[in-house]
Image 1 (spheres, rainbow, N blue to C red):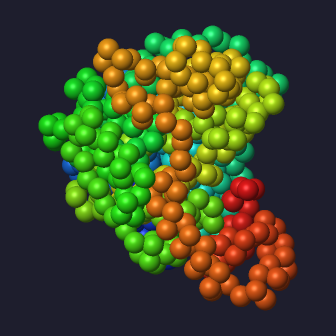
Image 2 (cartoon, rainbow, N blue to C red; image 1 turned 180 degrees about the horizontal axis):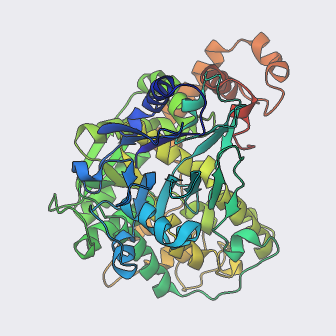
Length: 532
C-alpha cells in the first residue's frame, strides 16, 4: 500500500502546478512515509507517489515507473499477488522485483483489458505517451480494497487521489466522487472519464441470480488457505491482527500452520507475530490470548483507556473520511500506531467473511434463502465504504498495510456461488449431528478438523461479538457519554436543519457528523458516505 495522486490535463504554468501537486500529495504521506516522488511529462500531466515499501524496498521499486522507452508512466497503490506469474507467462521485461512494475508492462502489451488478469488489491493511474496526444487510464481492484477518488475541474482537468483529503480547499477541483470498485476508465485530454466495469461475476451484476452450487468443505478450506498464503508475500516484517473472533483467529491459524509454504515471504521471525488491542479486561484480549497460546504465536497485547480513545476520535474521523465505523476504527487506529512502532509494515485482517457468509446476528432473521443472498450481496458490494474502508484507512494512517484474505477473488467466486440455503442460520438444526447451524457455519465446518485442529473448539464455534464491543464496553459508553456532554439539546433539536441529508439520530452521530463536516465540507464529501 502507498498513496497515489495524479493531475491530468492541468492548466497554468508548470512550476505552479508542480508545487500544487507536491502539496496535495503530501496530505497522504501517512500512507507512504518511506519516499515521495513527482513526475511530469511536461504537458501539464503529473503523477505523484507516496511510498510504503513492502515489495522490493530498494530504490529500484520507487514510483512513478516507466517502460523501457519512457513512453508509458504509471503509479500503483496496492499489491499484485500474481505478479511473478504474470512476468513469466507473458514474457515481461521487468527491471525490478516490484509487483507494481507489471501494471504498466501488462498495459503496454494488452491495453486496458490487462486489468482482468490482475489478482490483488490495487489502484493505478497510467499516462500513455506513445501517440500524438497522451492517453490516460485509471483502475481499481474488484472490491475497492484500495481506496480511490476522482475529481474534476472546470478547466477539464482530472484529479485522482488515494484519499479525498487531497481535494479539500482546492479551488481548481469543482467536484469529486468515489472511483467505483471493479472499474477502469480511459480518456484523453479534455474528455471526462467513462467508467467501465471489468469485474463482472454473476452474483454481483445479475440482480435476479440466486446461486445453486453445493457445499464442498475441503474446497472452502483449500481456497481460504491459498488466499492467506498469497497475502504473506512481503519483503518486510509482517503479522496478523488477532481479535480472538472467528475470522481473525482463522486467518491467524492458517498463517501460523502454513507460513512455511508461502512464497516470496520474508522469514523474519521463527513464530508468527499477532497483535490485539483493548481496554484492560476486555473480552477480545482474553479471547486473543487463548488463540495465540493455542497456536504458539509471538503475541503482542496493547491497552488503551476510554479517554485515550476519545482523544483519538478527531484524527480518526480525519483519516477515515467518514462518520461511520468510528467505534471500530478507533481501536484499530491505536493498534496500528503500536504495530508500526515495532517496525512491522504489513498485517493480515479478517474483514469480509461476515458479509459474504451472513455472519451478522440479524441474518438469523432472513425470511428465506433468496433474501439472505440478496442481503449478503448488498453488504459485500458496499464494503469499500464500510469495513474495508475502515480497515484500510485506520491502519494506513500510520503507514501499516492491512490485507484481507476473505475478499480474495477466488474465495468470493466460491462463497458467493454456494446455494444460500446452506448459509441460512437455524440453531435448531445440527447438520453434523453436533454443532448448531449458526452464522458462518460453512466456514466453521470447513476448518473443523479434530485430528489436526486449527482452533480450539470453543473458539471455532463461538458466536460473533462486534469489534468495538469486544475491545471494551467502557469505550463505547464513553463515546456516547462524551457526545451527550458536548452536543446540547438545542443543537440536537435542530439537527434536521443542519443535516437535512442523512440526519443523525443520536448525539453520538451528530458529534461525529459535525467533525466530518469540519474536515470535509460540502455536498460532494457527503455523497461519498453510504446510507446507514
